[in-house]
Image (cartoon, rainbow, N blue to C red; front, side, top):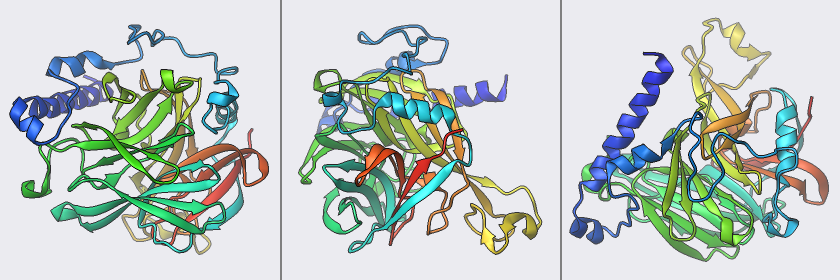
Length: 393
């Protein structure tokens, strides 16, 4: 059996085991825990998991083997939710190379510690950043935040989200009216792992919120897997879906709005980075995702780890250091296929992180400057937003 096939089988078995734990609850236990499961049998999620060769349809969507006409895809301007036209992002991504980024501006965030950043959107001339404040991870204690800043980095307001052990926010996205924020327990899947079972909810759930621009939150639904990124796909409110990936972005789920019914699930077909934040490309059937993977450094000589005195993309500079592989991908959420993948390692943030370590946002203009902009905010604590312009090949 090939390594890839074995890994895929292992992922499927793990997911089925997780669902067995969830569906093992009787109705009284589930109701008392306040859970709203959308799956009733293990077989259902196995049936939903798809691979690129599948050509089945789900709830009226197009065959999974056919990709949209990417050069002309998009929604009417009124239904783009304030996002960059999908076709523009697709064209830029298809022409990017590994080291084609120009830093136009660095916005230093002031007035609020952002702890550990997770996701970012721009809405109504404000920057919104999701972040986790870990109090005691071994006891599942922490706080989930959605911060609001102006375009100059000044702190405006904040909203605490989450319940109990479900305090870890993921990447976020917006449809132009609401911001969608997943909150999950700080571990993979729905098993407690090393976290004390006394501090885990039953059996371990994520909560999907939607939040208005003035930080009024509504809980939409719960789900028994770790929900880590979210992208609002579709044109207009009547055709929108939430495409959400789990811990490590190994599985991509599609949910209906607003009730959170699970429509499909697909194995992520790429593994060069773990997605941390995604946004949809309206009308293109794709999502743009950023991610990072810490890889062991293969060269023992210290001279190979530095350019002058500057460490190049390292978690630390000691023997055994890890290299931060950053990357962007355009992904079809119904198949898990990456249409385009671009490594991002050439530019470091003020905190020494690879740009795509966590939050990303793409806009067709920023703060009065026209043209496609990629914004990144990977630095923790006293963070910053790095505004870049792609230099296409």
